[in-house]
Amino acid sequence: MNGTPRVTVIIPAKNEGPHLAQTVAGVLKAQTAVPFTVLVVDDGSTDGGTDALAPYRESGQVAVHRTSGLGLANARNLGATLAATPYLVFLDGHVFVHDHWLDPLIALLEAGTADAVCPAVYAHNRPRRVGFGVTFDGRLRYTWLPRQGTGPYAVPVIPGCAFAIKTAAFRAVRGCNERFRTWGFTDIELSLKLWLFGFRLFVHPGCAWAMCFAPAIRIPSRRNT
Image (tube, rainbow, N blue to C red; front, side, top):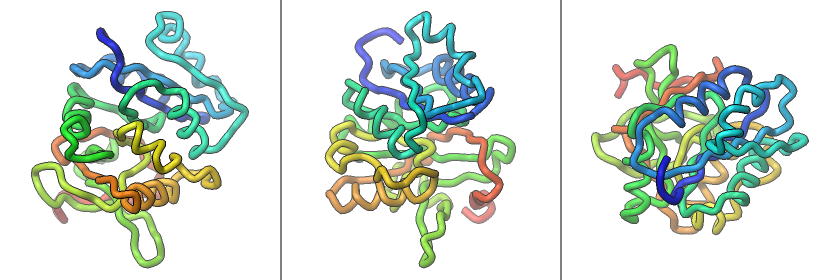
């Protein structure tokens, strides 16, 4: 990607296997007008999943920072600390993007419409099941939202698996709570902090990325949207 990077794509990963290389390859291959750099935080992996990234590291396309195992929240925070760009994009190591994946999200941030924004997310093997941001019920259960409109709009929670955020906003709320070491509640906690600090969280329904999901995660089907 030519030009001074404006985005750091942070991929925290632990034992993602071949999915990690597929995610990185997809990010580097997808077309976008937004200059970016890629940082993989290998959070104590033991499966050798980052070995396949050697060609990208040698060419300078990807940086890999290894830890002894900080947990997901701290891995994200570390990536943000190492970044030197005005915008951050967080991706799980099993998310697959499409051409022009960055452009509409970063445009919203640059325009000041939102301070953090997520794409629509769908299960890679069930493309008709799409989540448009996240909420939580009375028991704090993680619940994907159906589509609410055609243009970008506010949502209660942005999923940690895939979102873009102003670096200043992420740092203003001191990132993710370091006590959360697995997925789920860290997304809710970060989103609540952002709202409480006056930041705006949006989903862009016209931008969709695919993800390999754990079986426990349910996404509303399109017939319910």
